[in-house]
Length: 514
Image 1 (cartoon, one colour):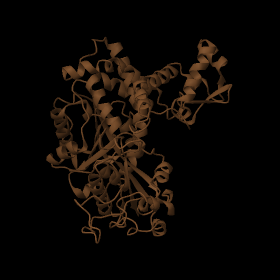
Image 2 (tube, rainbow, N blue to C red; image 1 turned 90 degrees about the vertical axis):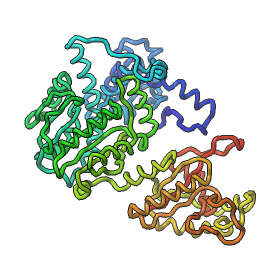
Image 3 (cartoon, rainbow, N blue to C red; image 1 turned 120 degrees about the vertical axis):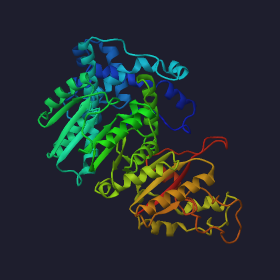
Image 4 (cartoon, rainbow, N blue to C red; image 1 turned 60 degrees about the vertical axis):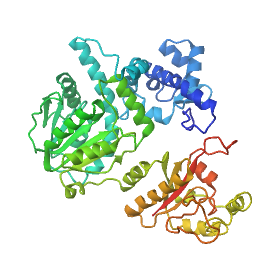
């Protein structure tokens, strides 16, 4: 599907990148309007013409046609020139009644907009400046239910990625969901592990809605509802629970409160139980996490996004053994802790996800898994080294580098790789690449081997004869005959030549894994 997307790459079109940033809200407003009209449901199953859709929605056909074409431009609709139909993502997630429907979640984002307009005031005040007015109970319950419905759909998608991690480690026992919200994550565990019983804890007015949503899922039997403020003393029995969930909780509080919540959660944990922290982490998805951090600034009393090291250090101080950050395929990640390393090893996390997460924390702008077969090798590449590069003849540069033919043969021994994107200074980038290779080796990828960007810059100066640091030196991608431009483009990333030395530069490295 081709469609509009914000160019997150500052090395792109320059002023156009800034223009895209400034007009990003145009896209969300078009999206929100379509969702409020329930347009994607209306177009099912075979689409409609602009005149038909406009007539059913009470809109002017000519202007509505312009609106539909805008939705085509951002990738949510497609047209043959007369009939407009939803694209696959829109059909899967924006049609009411579908199992993957996210409409409630998307429209909840519009509810948050007014407070975002006060971001500047929050920055000056050092915290939130707009607070909800007093509401009567019916209005509060209505707003709470809309919020829980919004979060429920998102939580279902996350749960599908979380459950397999516990496939070999949970049986009978009790689950405590702290700040249960819609109960979607607890519901997923109850579905997959019938021997579990659940206690859902939240504020009283939230639990009224939680109970209704759980009843709709057919899961009220075996579920206990505990009305409580999680910042106040807890009543759940200590040492009782096989699984304690802190899902999308800690970002609503400050450091002191978060440590207090984790302390209480740890106290509820059985000797062979697991404490699960599910949240946004800047190491996993920095753009999303750091924007969500500002969302906490404008929409909560003192919430913020915490780096994984803060959470892991806090859990360690509580006498628990935390996992590394386990990134999900979406924008959030997990840290799971247990009382002993032996219990923690019963988990079944994806090895690659944990490795990629650790490598991201080294400071790369992007870590992209690719099949090794898309790496392009060409004989002409080393001509750029021989003619035009002052480093030609240096150790690990042509003609002292691996020739293209050998590089091509070597690639056959690997099935997967990581593209690592960074930026100058070159020496710092190359040291990070070496650390990434080491992380891969320690994760049982004993064949891990890295190609980095540019001539070796580890030493202050380079002799013309033998390398003084062969232990750490690695060939550059281009010196080994790898067509960096073609490889990066085949991986779906952007790379272009620079018009001046002052332009923003990118470095790419290739880490082979097997």
